[in-house]
Image 1 (cartoon, one colour):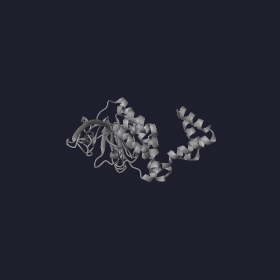
Image 2 (tube, rainbow, N blue to C red; image 1 turned 90 degrees about the horizontal axis):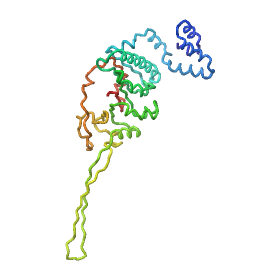
Image 3 (cartoon, rainbow, N blue to C red; image 1 turned 60 degrees about the vertical axis):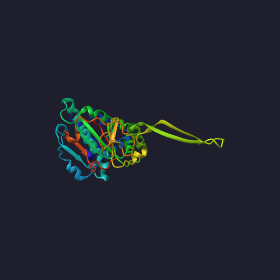
Image 4 (spheres, rainbow, N blue to C red; image 1 turned 120 degrees about the horizontal axis):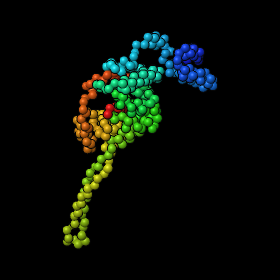
Length: 314
């Protein structure tokens, strides 16, 4: 296939399809063959980019005898670790996405035909914008829960998501993912504003006291003293943009509409002195202690490089 793509030669593929019952695929190739030369060249160029990782002899030799069965993986408790060096991430991204799509369809098929048993499959995808840029990620996350699949992604900030998936879809990430873990060091103002808005506001009670003294025109009279106390309520952000950018010693965990410092018990008063919202509801089970069937993890320093982790747990 790589040779056909690099040479722009459709004849071998057409000969193979002519001997199989695949009329739609044959029609697609026939349509490409009749396409304008400039557009056809663009199609071959894009396809060559997707297959660029196979330009290496070592890669082709390693892939000569595939030993992976997505359908079997969807039913087992094995774990796949996918790693890619920083300077090869763009080259490997199409292959990683292809692997994920294959597993995704197998997991959906298994969920349709079998009742859920045990914990769902987990995808832990760090630096997803660079290494696994799934084009329909929002649709995947919205559907995954009902298909016995959980997705956790790691981002530097929402600016990465806006660049990869567009502004409107990136803005929906904080509501699309039910659980968010925010680490210190985020500098993107758009991300900080979105998190601050998601945390909400509270009524801050303020008290002011005014003391006064009035002198009488009669030098024999004593001065008049006044003392007034004023109570009022001010609406204020729970955490400002600066508070979020400089989280002191802990991360910030958001689950639904509730939040807490991740290294403090639920309901603990934050160190900045602002009132803590209602505590999170206790989860029915500790997911961290349970092994998910068929976990697929993209490991880049074990998610240590991300500052914003989003999880589709519900």
